[in-house]
Length: 186
Length: 292
Image 1: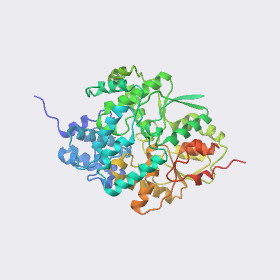
Image 2: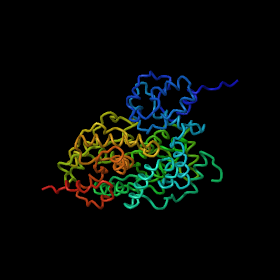
Image 3: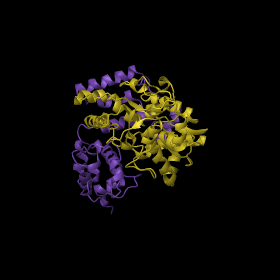
Image 4: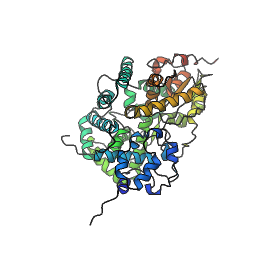
């Protein structure tokens, strides 16, 4: 009979390309937490989050905002004495939470990532204005105005494209992506 | 003539067009040819890896395959494009199963990647391939007295790619010294600018930007030099926002290293894309004086 993998095993299985050591080799030294530039904005430090994964506290881990605050700076990864790819782990948790559609309330990250991916699959290149609606409405009035002001300045200075860029062999590109993730219709 | 396959990346098309212009001008002056990859696509940024890693590396592989057709190593000026392309290349070379799977997808665009080229950051081309001595020989307008904060950011040095020093690199300082400027040693030269957190965790990103600007201001830097369009955008376009949110009064120009290099080689500012900044770089231009 098949055994159900524990949460910590599931997370470890998500780290496909990571060359880091398994999470269970974490010695809870806290070098990652001491290194992380955004730790003060996280509800659990990276060290604590790894401890929670190893303790299979699935719900608490997924509800945490920690992994969506990771900016992929890889400072923790290069310093970890146990050579765990901690930034890679945060990517793994993001993927897991998107698949399960389970993330902290109000998080902009998941919607933004999904929209970004869809927009690349439509045109081959990224185009900032398409992305704005995914986050702009979750901003307060003040942030919204600041953002609109910045965008206007960029437009005036010719730094925002008016039309979305497209690659030439877009149909081939879509078929290529379809061989990795079948999305139907492509 | 050194020739490379050039992968500008999405930012350099518009937001960071000044990086593109100055990269083309300065390499040309150094006898380096950057041949833009035909029909290149997005590298996957960071967001693709949040959704699907395999698809992200397939995007990387398409660019690598088109570069390989020319026989020239791939050069990326953006640190995120560089990091993604570098690791995608490494994984495709060492993992036959991954390579087979991705090449099966690439068939749809009549492409194949066999793993015969290397991936470099644009700064690496200058510092390692061209070399500092060669660069110095081309400097006609040394930026004497210019206090520059060389800002590495993250992905140009991290994760560790090969043998490089991830805790105390010096190549950016060395390059700035070569153009005649005075590199200042500021605390946060290797700290994150926030990247895409500027959208998804605005408060956190703005505090990182504030810390970085403060760190450079503490050392009385005239300018912060960057090698990444994301860093440039966060530090420059959100500098006014930081001032409003934190009651600071920063006014530090954020320039690409290629713009400073170009000025020191006597290239006209306009050709280097100078003039589209939010924080004017005019004051920096006065440092470029012809050598007597």
